Image 1: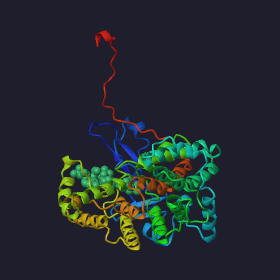
Image 2: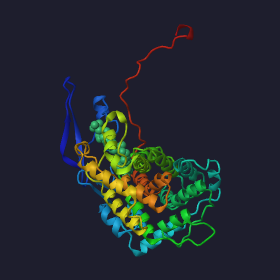
Image 3: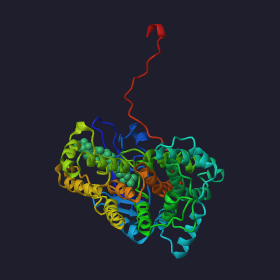
Image 4: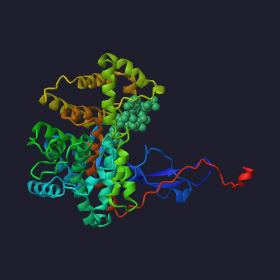
Amino acid sequence: MKLADNKATLSFSNGSPSVELPVYQGSVGPDVVDIRKLYAQTGMFTYDPGFLSTASCQSAITYIDGDKGELLYRGYPIEQLATNCDFLETCHLLLYGNLPNAAGKAEFTKRVSNHTMVNEQMQFFLRGFRRDAHPMAIMTGLVGALSAFYHDSTDINNPEHREIAAIRLIAKMPTLVAMAYKYSVGQPFMYPKNNLSYAGNFMHMMFATPCEEYVVNPVIERALDRIFTLHADHEQNASTSTVRLCGSSGTNPFAAIAAGVACLWGPSHGGANEACLNMLEDIQKMGGISKVGEFMEKVKDKNSGVKLMGFGHRVYKNYDPRAKLMQETCKEVLTALGLENDPLFKLAMALEKIALEDDYFVQRKLYPNVDFYSGIVQRAIGIPVSLFTAIFALARTVGWIAQLNEMIGDPEYKIGRPRQLFTGSERRDVLPIAKR
Ligand code: SDX
């Protein structure tokens, strides 16, 4: 970042001395007012619950222009990455800042493939869960438990440890998600196969059984790979900020990523894809497209507490570019599977059309986000609804670890410790219980 030729002056109507605050600019996007010295100079904090106007860090990984509906990973538009690259190339880009050449891609792929197995002891953690445990409950536990197996790579300040932990996490997430799925259906775990692609290997671990050969469907393999790319990173969203704050204490990378998994689970964040599909199924049960108008009235009624899941975004005030690509992927997969008349897809398209013409949504700049179509395509592939967010976590792990490593690699980073506006009781003395 560089000092802008602009400064901010903060003045107070009560005659307190004004302060000058430096303004910094990045390579693109809004400038920032540096308030690091504000408390020392004024004895005051800034106040921004939800961080609507707060940059928590500087980063060179992902840039979103919410007004344009643009998403860049290390400068490359998501549309180009999703169509010209695969997920492992995107992982290399997010981690190291560049797209690999053929030799680099082969080397990176080999390294990831060689770390896809998990310690045999990991399977015993699953036995503690009920078979109907939510996969995100299992994933939060399993990812945190990984730190018990890799004492050789838990020093987050050691660059080699950070590097091998990144490879291990990217490599093992598909294995763990597939194990959570197999446990829920009472089938044996399938070991990874190094001769399959990243997405193909995940499909094999999910859907193969020891009883017969499993053939990867290339259309679904490509669609899954693209779904992973679309979910890989998204600047300082809630779960990424959680990983950064957790990692800032110096805890090990596995524990920090487990915190990200836990945060992603929320229905306002990564849990929205599961919530969106459940919403579509509920509307379908109510009568489908004929009931959309009634449903939309509920959404617009503040007291109903009903939201159009998969719509809206803190940053995008235009169409989420990932939603467009997800819709295309949806069409491709449904056609390949002969499901082009899938009623839920038709319902989602109808819902989108109505919402985009409705003043409530237009005024609030609410558009479909990444979660609106992702559930329909995953359901068509045969992935259970409850596993959708675990797959989001699988894909987002590379973004989380790239952001964590960027923070730890920044000499300026400190442990994150926000302050507060205190509105509770002032000092008072405890009375003996007889006098309370
Ligand atoms: C993800 O941050 C990221 O980058 C996240 C993510 C990533 O890749 O990491 O993109 C992934 O989490 C996508 C978002 C998935 N969540 C959902 O689809 C859940 C539904 N969406 C909403 O909960 C909401 O839009 C949020 C949480 C996504 C954003 O909330 P904001 O920015 O705090 O916006 P807001 O709630 O203040 O909304 C502004 C207005 C409000 O109405 P008013 O008070 O102004 O009258 O829009 C309304 C909201 O009530 N609104 C909605 C709505 N989303 C916002 N009304 C109905 N349905 C919705 N979906």
